[in-house]
Image (cartoon, rainbow, N blue to C red; front, side, top):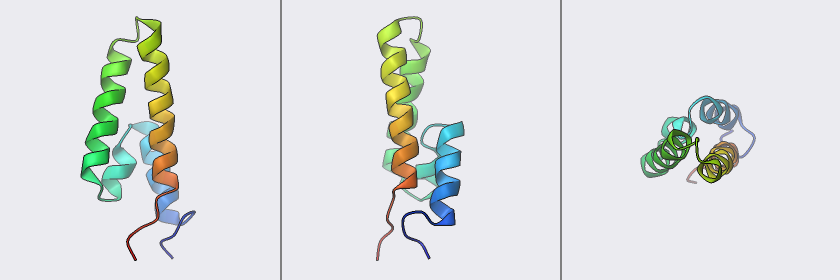
Length: 74
C-alpha cells in the first residue's frame, strides 16, 4: 500500500518535521525537497525579523503536510 496514510508517508512526514524537505527527498521529489529546504532555511536564518520566522514556520508546516498527503504515481 503506497497511498495516503501509508507507512512511507508517515516516515516522510516525520523526516520533514525534523528537516524541511527531507520527506520529499525520501519520496524522490527532488525539486520540492530543495524548494522547501531553501525557503524555510532562509526564513529561519532571518528569524530575527519576526515576519520571515512566521512565514518559515508556515512553510515548514506545509512541507510536513505535503509529505504526509503525497499520493504516488499509479
